[in-house]
Length: 163
Image 1 (cartoon, rainbow, N blue to C red):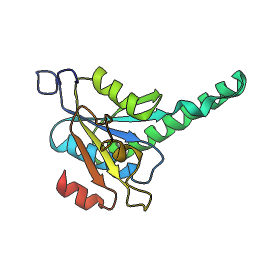
Image 2 (cartoon, rainbow, N blue to C red):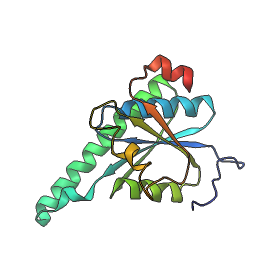
Image 3 (cartoon, helix red, strand yellow):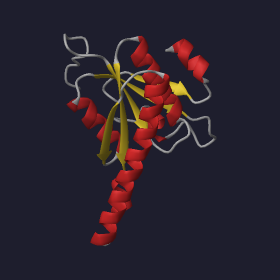
Image 4 (cartoon, rainbow, N blue to C red):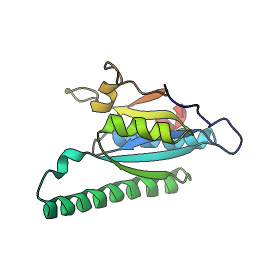
């Protein structure tokens, strides 16, 4: 069970959470979340998760790899944030976490009681819709807030009309 959402209380805004990663469909989720935030007078949070399995090396190498991963996370978030500011006019909140994606998403939702909607994008690839979208249909992996799944085939114009 998730803690009470505060997004409807005075001084709070409904926050849309989008996950930033290296998948092509990520851009669609971010675009929808930002436009939906703008159209509902809400806000948007962008989350980048650095998976822990990437750092199983000697201490010095591990530190360099962690710093490189953090730099890549910051660069990806900064790129999406700049695009949101320029095209949508919304200032996104940027969050970086290290851990397993589903666990870190759950933790952030629990910590930030303004997050009311998780926005994911589904890939059209033959391998499936993507790991996060697949996880919402798995046993026990469902997220404790509503999830909007955006097809990656939607254009900016289509997303604008839907958001």
